[in-house]
Image (cartoon, rainbow, N blue to C red; front, side, top):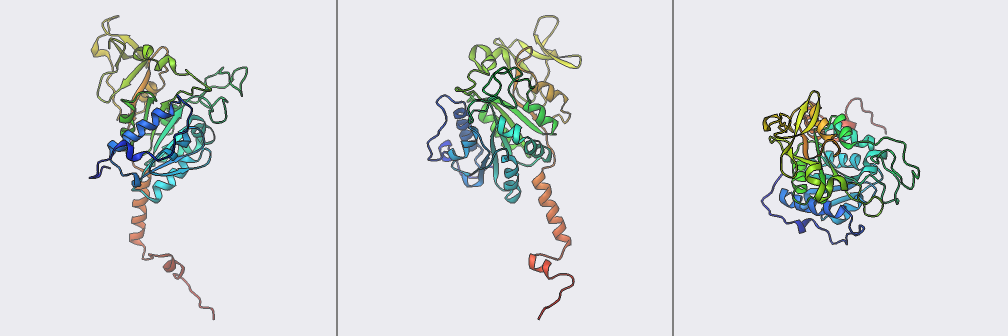
Amino acid sequence: MTTQTTYQAKDYKSSQIVRWCPGCGDYGVLSSLHKAMAELGVAPHDTAVISGIGCSSRLPYYMNTYGFHTIHGRAAAIATGVKVANPKLSVWVATGDGDALAIGGNHFIHALRRNVDINILIFNNKIYGLTKGQYSPTSDRGFISKSSPYGTVEDPFRPAELAIGARGRFFARTIYSDMKNTPEIFKAAALHKGTSAVEILVNCVIFNDGIFDGVTLKENRADKTVFLRHGEKMIFGKDNNKGIVQDGFNLKAATIGEDGYTLDDVLVHDATAADPTLHLKLALMDGKELPIALGVIRDVAAPVYDEEMEAQIEKVKAKNPIRSLNEYLMSGDVWEVK
């Protein structure tokens, strides 16, 4: 994916003034994306950013790349068309929890099922921010909002559950304010061949401020999050003395050196395992009894839709003498009308 030209983050910034609320978590995502694209080295004119509707979907305006601000929920479908029409493009989708998982839910799961080579960034703030504070598909049961003044009586979608359940081969999670690791996660998503889904925990300072404080604040993060790296032990904690261990068919957070647990008991992360069972268990840890998992959780190789389609077309063309629409129209029985 790299070229001979060296790029900087500024090469991917447009001249548009960024119009998000002061303090919005989307700023951090945008900055990380600029940095990741520069390090990937794909030229701006070989990159396309597609979005739907919502606060996060303003992102294409702030990119010095091709961009398309589409309609509500349809970003994944349109991105699929962009990639299939021009497979050489690096295609990104900027979408929110409402845009991707409500009206756009069907497009989201089928993009993952098909394994189209696009990168879907899900800005999850558990609220509809652009329309001023209604509960979203990821809002927790009991959440009080303008559209649920007595608390929502629905259970939320969990993006990882949808992604992996749709046979997704790449799922990662990060925090908007993690400026060190987020660009690396975006790069891993781009380098994955097939659909990558990255959930970004984003703070909405106006309508849902502090929703992720339990895991994102500095005083909480060490004990409430575990950053997964392929091939490394699942260790976390302020003193790096805790680890994720197996407890029957479940996972458990254990303190190394206590209750008979040693470093050898701590699981080693294998992001490339084809069986999604452990990946799903890790992705569903919620920061309460178990720390929430960050980093690349699943990264499995599989046939890619756009590559398979292109190969199929070439195979059919090789066996078919017809090479143009005119040849097709003139094939078979033809009558000349005078």
